[in-house]
Each structure stands twice: as structure tokens, then as C-alpha cells.
View 1 (cartoon, helix red, strand yellow):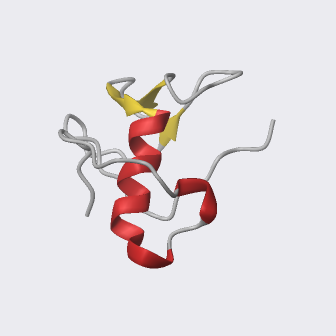
View 2 (cartoon, helix red, strand yellow):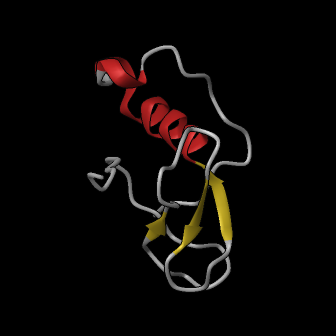
Length: 76
């Protein structure tokens, strides 16, 4: 499976790590975790919604129609 990519920076609120992991065969409801400490961060769907919100009107078609997410992961 191709490794997913979002155009946003991430910082774990617990350890300060910058990488995220998804389980094999992930879906929008799969939990993304911090690579460094394993803390649950947000679902893949929530992360895509945050990326789309931050991208603004020129967001890729794949992100259109996703809603804003409260409690989004911290970023730099």
C-alpha cells in the first residue's frame, strides 16, 4: 500500500514527535498514532479534514466536502 501523505506539519502533544503511523489496511475511521510514543492522535478521516481546512479553497478534490474537526492534532 502507498504511504499516505498530507501537506501539514504535525507535533505530538505528548512527546513532540513529528511522524504519524496508520495500521495496515487503514480507513477513514482508523486511528493515526505518533511514531515516537504511540499516542493516539486522531482518525485518518479527521486528519484529512484538518488538512483540507488548512489548504483552503484550492484543496485537492479528494478532500472536498469534509467538515471541520474539533480537537485537531497540534501542528507547528
